[in-house]
Length: 113
Image (cartoon, rainbow, N blue to C red; front, side, top):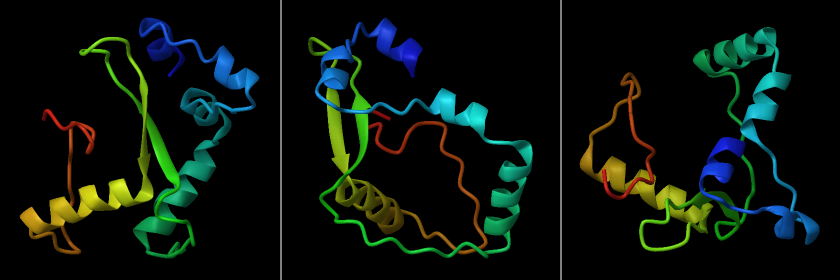
């Protein structure tokens, strides 16, 4: 993520100064042991991790950074409602079964795909 921010010339310092904390996936990835990754894989493969969270639908789920094709790159907030709408669109077009596996080489929110 840091490489992307540098290439896009996005300065996060003003946001950090305003108290916004950035969590970089490349940092988190280094902190997760192989055993922890294996445990999560097996737990979900065996359907042991059915957890429900009570998160407001309008709360930000992800911030996407645009490429700047129409000007300066910018961050775009997507809510949980937005992400669920993407899933509903997929399920309305594709008859997905419990035994199916999906592979998506593009991000689900890539509208130009």
